[in-house]
Length: 176
Image 1: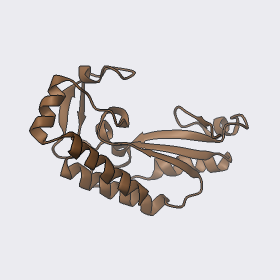
Image 2 (image 1 turned 180 degrees about the vertical axis):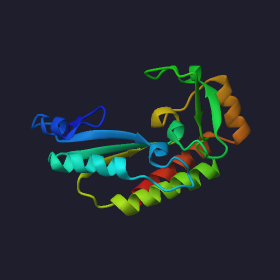
Image 3 (image 1 turned 90 degrees about the vertical axis):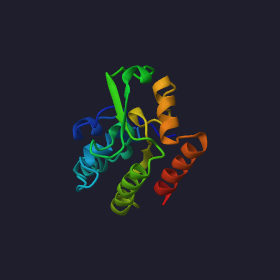
Image 4 (image 1 turned 120 degrees about the vertical axis):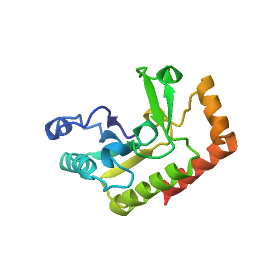
């Protein structure tokens, strides 16, 4: 069974001090941390640093890159909801801005990011697991149910079928 140290990226000393039974470290970041503009260059340094720490400590890396509310702020057609729509998380922010999961601009831009990620890291033996989530808060596949969200779904054509299609698109991109 694989056990991963969860939390912020540990220092090299902390990673080396993990018990033998802990096989890896977990690192979470956001798409906008790596690419502040969806049209701009991607800064791979945070991931490269996590890979370096894991490799030097003889650990594997469980990597998470969140889109959704972690999408670049200049992504077009983003929607903003009151934080109360997301009250089930660890904190309730004043508001959450994120793309609609079925939005073509989001799918195209995040799809390009996924392609670049794969071109750079596919086959990297230090990366054991990649969790790439979609268009909600904290990268989860869970969407709100508040009345504002329901109204946005109607306005933007998000149905159960189009949501499922968006997940199939992103899952297919990551598998490739």
